[in-house]
Length: 130
Picture 1: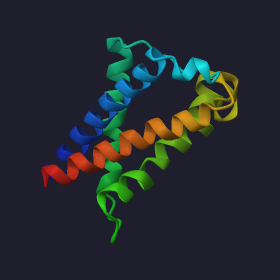
Picture 2: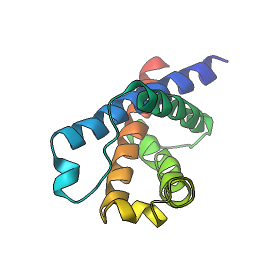
Picture 3: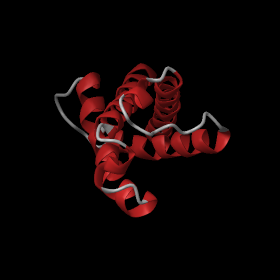
């Protein structure tokens, strides 16, 4: 049970940090200057969604991946939510085209980076908690 709680909490923290990174990239004008229209508001509904889903995705860290350091684990596991976002959520749930291309050509790169932030923060938090 302790491992479940740690993974969920760490994933939730990763979701919060990722949300702040998304907001900071928009606030600083990075995304708009590169033609990407990913700019969710830093509002409670958006935060709740990312924090809860971050926690749910955090359960992937229960899968044993032998021989990988925390940074590598976080990087590898972050690919799963990235693939879901790019090839399921964007085209089928939000109607923004395959890989979110309708939000800008560099959208997949931003999604990859944001989820990488989630994965590394989650992995580091789990390592610290153990």
